[in-house]
Length: 469
Ligand code: BES
Ligand code: ZN
Ligand code: ZN
Figure 1 (cartoon, helix red, strand yellow):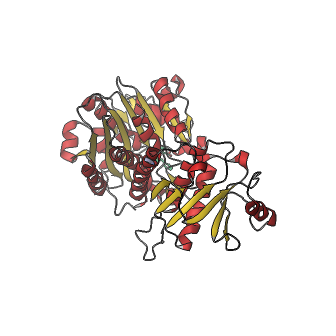
Figure 2 (cartoon, helix red, strand yellow):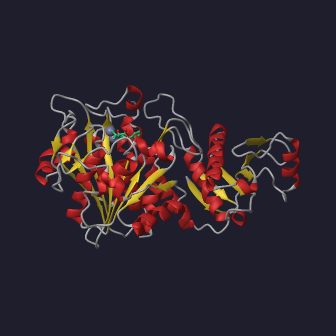
Figure 3 (tube, helix red, strand yellow):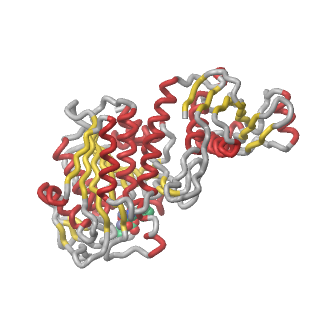
């Protein structure tokens, strides 16, 4: 899709608030008619006077948010797809509240979201025709060409992430994930993949313990953008291409969507793609310790005590708390190998985080308050929902073990903090921030402008964090 600021005579799409005060006669009489009420996402095809044109409601002026405008954009995009429209001319009839430029970008993002459909496994593919969106320049605010470019880079990353996460684990296992990451080489990302022997040689025993039960080989994926240009930011993503729970087996209902347990890794790949497309000059390294958590005669078991790269012995209380084990070795590897200025780990780590914050917020904590704030500011500027998790000493105590250096579960309460702090225990001397995306990474049903399934949540935040670093 291409976005422009210019006047054209393409099919007109008007975004209209329900309480528009200074509208033209046509809009006013339409709103009075009750055939169109301007409710958010409501679409009305005007075939009468001045038509054909599409009216899209955006709700009350003062209730308008970037989210509601994206949702209206999504509804418009879906409607336009049914009409088979390829080019449109958008008039944003809403100048109050939010900055007009921000409104334009939100509508554009909504339209992009209408184009996404995971239909790889369907014979009947959904048609999407829209290729060009022209915004009426006087109504679009101070958007720059580069803002649209930025949006499109992030969108490419998000689509990539969503496809990786949505693909079921029968077709998306470490080898496939690594091959997908290697596609970034065309964009200037150098990708190195380590196999089991090499991972063993490095000493990542905690990671390998998780991988033991699966017939699929674990692969450590390392992606570097601008290596050698100073200390990189390290993005470490949880890469469980399937999490059955292992011997601490998950109940059937919670197991079905566990192909999404590599969403953190996929988010890192998506963000790396967006950054590479934008020709970002900052050094970044993306690390994914990819594997499956399965059951077999050789799988790790509750009660095992396993070593780790950092040298800490870990008591396995529950084999379903596997993500923190792979991440413990991955953050330690990141720190020792790349000496990064900052480590950000991102993971579908705990159900407890979803219980605490709901389905649409990510939990954040870290070992440096300034860095935590920096990540949260990046999220705020991208309108992604995050909330800080408590990280005091009492939560760290939850991970104490009677027989080893640390325990892999912190008990029933405060599980999101305990899991995050577990990972932090393996970072020796580097600023580190943890993001738990267990809730927002994957939707059981569509939410606002997001589809059912993978969302690509936090690709934009990681992109913004690196760009503004
Ligand atoms: N992958 C899960 C966390 C998860 C839950 C992600 C729901 C997405 C949706 C993780 O590996 C896990 O199973 N965590 C356990 C930890 C527990 C055993 C301490 C959990 O959250 O129940
Ligand atoms: Zn698990
Ligand atoms: Zn998991």
